[in-house]
Structure formats: structure tokens, C-alpha cells
Length: 405
Ligand code: GLU
Image (cartoon, rainbow, N blue to C red; front, side, top):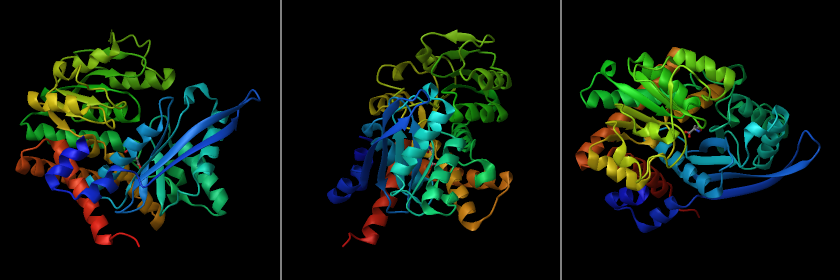
């Protein structure tokens, strides 16, 4: 639906719609992993390569019980639009393994990662398809993938994935990059609305890599963070949460469950509807829906997650006058610093943190302004404008390259 609205505005030819609405390649792999107790379990993983007209496929790998082909398909196409919106020379892909990583030992997780990396090693590569972290995957998982891929190639190939540990070809500022990008775009929007960060409060759904970093950086910008949630619970304190204390708690207990220095909201989904100026959904897809959109009080929604708002909810928010900074713009900071990491690997450089942050800020601000301007010119919401820009760029790359053979 999001694609169709923008494609229609662009007057996109049918064959381009057909190309862009389907992934170039979908790969499903079923593979056995030896568990600690000696049993063997079969897991299913996916890698979907949506489009590479603008450059090599790019996108994360998630480990989660609800991963399926439909989800990975949608996430892969969002990567194509995301890389186009922030104008980095990559296409879009996504991968995932259906599993609960918290039920696996460290050793089992390593075996699963390595076997999955082996299964997809024919279709990834530093100039072909470059995975990265996503939900429940991290720098350690990327290091295992680099090692597995490099063993097969019989040479070190650090640029095959991004989001690596700093001492193994990773980039300064990559871990916080998605959260930082969310805040950079949020601050642009705050400015557009004529507001001051010091006067504002924020709620974040999701306290993983994106949510926790966005919360910290929002706080540094002067915004009072009054609510956060994760899969276990939701916390709320109108006076402002002690983020340092929360971070310490989560690094010890993994989840927010049991935290005693704030009120717990039940059911946790109600947090989205609490009084706050800024709402950052930073968890999973389909959280703001036709059921709760009308109850949302925030005047600004900045999508840290991929696909957190359904099309029906989007329409409701637009009609209520809520400004939504769409996922393919708001959360593009991660893949942008992934691109910086990839350049550093190819050029054998290590950029300082300040340089990464300043280059990220330039990219995000410029992408935000381009989307905002088109939205104003066309009288559409920022999501439609972002899609128009992204689809236009990818379509131009396809038509200019021509159809093979
Ligand atoms: N998983 C992140 C995303 O959804 C980052 C992808 C990447 O860096 O390739 O944007």
C-alpha cells in the first residue's frame, strides 16, 4: 500500500512496479545444528535480496521466533528504499533465522550462526550482498560470520558484513548509529514544529540497541524521557526516568522486568498511548494500528523500528495532524554508518568517532530536508514523499542500466 501510493504519484510504468514490488531473489535454507545435549535440531533461515540496481544488496540479519519469509521480504524491500532515501550506493536485502536466541547457549548460537553463514555464503560477499546486525544479532554474531566466510574464501574478508567489533574492522559510532539517526531526524522535526527540546517529553517502545541509544541521545539533547518498554514490561515516570540507572539495570538483568524505580504500565502496549510529546516505536512491525492510533497523544512519531505503523494507522495519524518521520528515513542511521564501515574496510582506514558522527549528521539532515521539502511541495505526508524519492531513484537506476540481456 505504501509503495502503491507513491508509485501512482510518480506515474511509474507497470513493468517497473512489477520489478520493484517483488524481490530479485529469495533463499530459504533448512540446516541442522548440534545442540549441547547431543541432539540435533533443524532451523530455517532466509536471505531475501530485493534490489541491487543502485549497488550491492545490504541489510541486517535477525534471530527471532517470528521470522518468516513474508517478514523478511517486507524488511528487504524497506532496505532498498532506506539506502535510496539517504543516498548511499547500496540496494536492499534482509535475512533471518527462526529461533529463540535466548534459549540457546553461546556455543549453540555460534554453531547456528556459522552454519547459516555457510548456507548463504554463495550469495553474499563484499561487492554482492553485505549483511549486518538486526534484532537479537550483534557485533559478536558478525565476527562469527566474517570468520566463517573468510575460512571459505581462504583470506580475510572483513567487508562482507558491517556492524563488526571495533578491533575487527568495525566502525566507531556504528552501535549507536540507528539511535543517533533517530534523534537527528527527531530534532529536525522538533525544529520544524517550532518547539524546543527542553520543553518536550518522549516515550520509547523497545529498549534494545535502537531504543536504548535513542533514549540516551534524546536525553543529551534535553528531551525528558518518561517512558520505555521492552518485551517484558513498560516503565513510566512523568518526572523523567534515570537512564543511567536503567542502563545498568538492563546490562545486569537483560530485561526491564523487576525494575523498581518507576511505575510499571499494564498491559505494556498502553505505554504508546500515554501523554508525551514524542513517541519513538523502536521494537518490531505493526505496533501502531487502527486500534490504537486514535489514542496516541504524541505530536511527533519517529519510527526507530522498521514498519511499526500500519497503513490504516498512518492515515489516522495524518488526519489527527501527528507528524510521522517514516522508518526508511528515521532509522537509516544504522545502514548509513554501515556504509561508512564498509568504506573504511575497503580503504583500510579507521575514522575517528567525531568524523563518523559529523558525516552521519550531514547525511541524515540532508535526507530529512529533501523529504520534508517534497512533502511540502506535493502536499503529502513524509512517508509518501520518502517513498517517492526512493522509488524514483531506484527506477531511474533500472531504466538507465536497461534490461539484461
Ligand atoms: N538492521 C539495520 C536496519 O534495519 C541495519 C542494516 C545495515 O546496516 O545493513 O536498517
